[in-house]
Length: 248
Ligand SMILES: [Zn+2]
Image 1 (cartoon, rainbow, N blue to C red):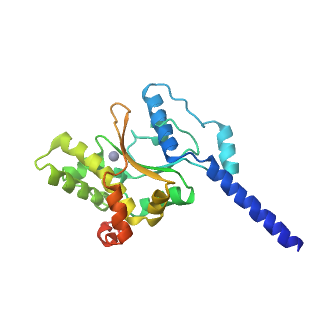
Image 2 (image 1 turned 45 degrees about the vertical axis):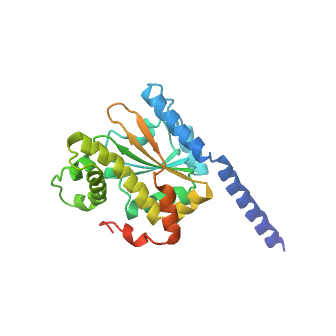
Image 3 (image 1 turned 120 degrees about the vertical axis):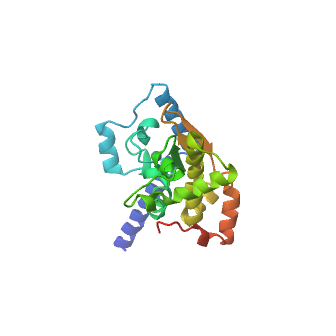
């Protein structure tokens, strides 16, 4: 009897703790506003450098992490995401991979952020003059495991050239960078039922963005232009087979 009572108390405390964590999280719009404001501070040279003291290390080490956004960005050394968004320890759940491609490993990591840690915002962050996008757009010779890594970008190049035949040079690369952001969002939406569920419940917003490596400014692109159509298609269960990438 006594042990049952203790069990109930423990379960109750656990539920209350979960509720407290959920209550701590901002809305998707508030989370996005925090990133928009942080990047604006960075660009203005007025970074607040929040959550960077040893106290934050001790706090997150003891209480766990509660990041408010999951972000996948490129590995490019000029795009350190916490710095350009002016955020600190425990604020952002980040995946970095050349070309910010969303294949199996990246999607699994994103699901950890949006489903396990319940971040209300997920961002695919491309950047101008991306080397991975440039390599694929210009048919540069790449070796080792890189061809398989950047293969998903080929879809973005094909989409851009289909819409704008003859595009080349910097204009082609910049168009591919943006299209590649949408391709990564689309891969995530088509291959992650957990992500879709959170979007449909209103607890998650997925947006694209492009960081300008010459100005420090993030251009916020909003949700995928065809998000509603993709969600409806996925509800029909008709397009899963079309979404496998060459890395799988
Ligand atoms: Zn890049």
